[in-house]
Amino acid sequence: MTRLLAIAFALASLALLPAAAAAAEPQTSLADLEDEVMCTICGTTLQLANAPQAQQERELINELIAEGKTKEEVKDALVEEYGPEVLAVPSSEGFDLAAWIVPVAGILIALVAIALAARRWRAGRPPEAGSGGGPAIAPADEERLRADLRRYDP
Image (tube, rainbow, N blue to C red; front, side):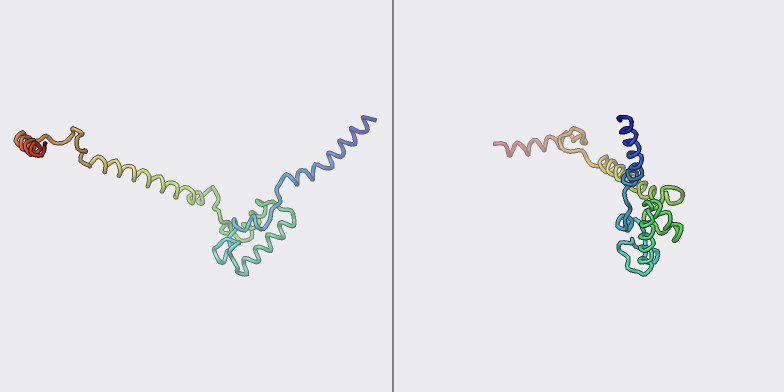
């Protein structure tokens, strides 16, 4: 009897595996893709576009989602249909890699330039009073200064 229950349990588990696999992969929706896909006519993301082309893209996305396609499969189908300019985010390979590298490199270069400029600016400033690093005062000027200061001492 226990062996029969174990077999029934194993068969039930196997029957549920496809459903569990489908549940593990999140269901794609139009809202998930609208901010990652461009209208090829407007040049804006699909969520902002109102052109007839944008509506055609939405319909294609909904058809692909109804077929059970994943987010990446839908994107691949859109690229096949409209070309790589349909994606709002450039790929991370080939020439599109420059879209990721150039801004980061520009920011790093700007930070280095600011640091060097600040260092140079600080090096050119005169030393603060009392730091002992100023130019030496001639003895005659020093005596005159002391005499003036004595006049104000009570």
